[in-house]
Amino acid sequence: MNVKIPRGTQDILPEQVKLWQWIEDKVRHITKKYRYEEIRTPIFEHTEIFQRGVGDTTDIVQKEMYSFQDRGGRDLTLRPEGTASVVRSFVENKMFGHPNQPIKLYYMGPMFRYERPQSGRYRQFVQFGVEALGSADPAIDAEVIALALEIYQTVGLKNLNLVINSLGDIESRLKHREALINHFKPRIGEFCKDCQSRLEKNPLRILDCKVDREHELMKTAPSILDYLNEESQEYFAKVRQYLDQLGVEYTVDPTLVRGLDYYNQTTFEIMSSAPGFGAITTLCGGGRYNGLVEEFGGPETPGIGFALSIERLIAAMEAEQVEVAFDDQLDFYIVALGDKAKDYSVKLLADLRNNGFSADRDYLDRKMKAQLKSANRLNAKYTIIIGEDELEKGEVQVKNMESGEQKEVKLAEFIDVVQKWSNRKEK
Image (cartoon, rainbow, N blue to C red; front, side):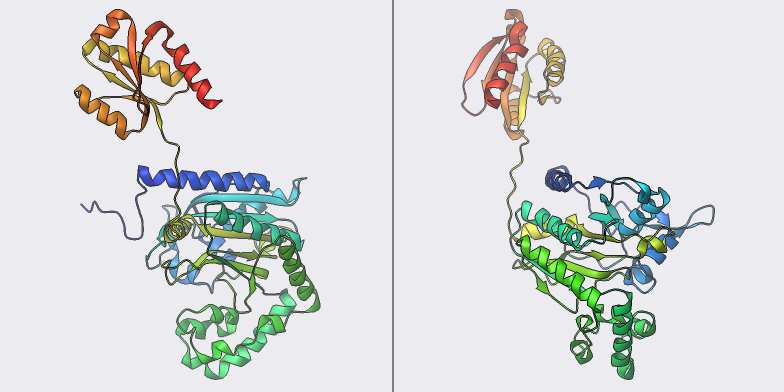
């Protein structure tokens, strides 16, 4: 029996989970400020959802999906990204008819891609993303970008670079597509097989190739910005204007195309420039995907969003040596000595918890010294010492672990007394 964890996955142990929960709390607080609401979709969907939504020419669909047939012969896939599932749900549940528009959603959960595992990149990873559906206003593009940046800044990252581009509307992309085909076709045989197959299907994807990125034709490829029609130029100018108003620093990169077929108009990436972060610097990517809702059978509905990996975010925090202080102090630890004291400690423990305190006790029948060491390791504020003598007197010894001060407290008054201590601390 193979009892090792599958390659490309990880166990997130309790000490690490504290950081994950801290990040998740920050993210939820930010999305609440921006009025994005959580949506939860299935971990697996019909394979066609991703083939149509993500695009047949993408690496995700061609190489990275975990697909299988269920017992009914249906083709299913573990979700490799979140947008396609959200758009499917948007259409299926007729959210386009909701009176409050645009629909602003976020998701957070595991995604699955079969790719080479490396630092901060796993085959099962947790992705957070937002989707704003129903508005073609460039101001919401700026809002989505600002939201993504705020997440990274809130967790303490400083070495951030925002790169933006415009892929234009359909008319602009068709003209650029023709120019790309004419540019690459005479020497397409010098490129990888993936690029050769993409030449006619989606030549824009050639610009995103990792194998041939140093080829000289890549450096001289026609820029999409030279093929933007007037409407697309004005749209991109407005997005930049709003980012400027928000004080968001950015760089325009005409080669930024992203790895998914559904993007048009605004695209963006946030990258880390932290020393030692690694060769792959991208933290987050997103953009506008007008037309995707129609692809799923819904009405004409513009949309924009982004997605980020929590694992990559944590890797960036480690590279920048961001320190996080967790408030995980234990309120009370009960040191019980003798059988009667142990029996009584069960009820005392429940009383403390029922009154809102965090509390624990020894379950290994250890001596007093070992129990006090355990209280220290658990970072207890107070230790309650109770033995048979204390029970006979109807009192307990309460030790302040920080000051070392120890007091006798009557059992009958114990909860009221510690509640008053707690109230004084809060004030």
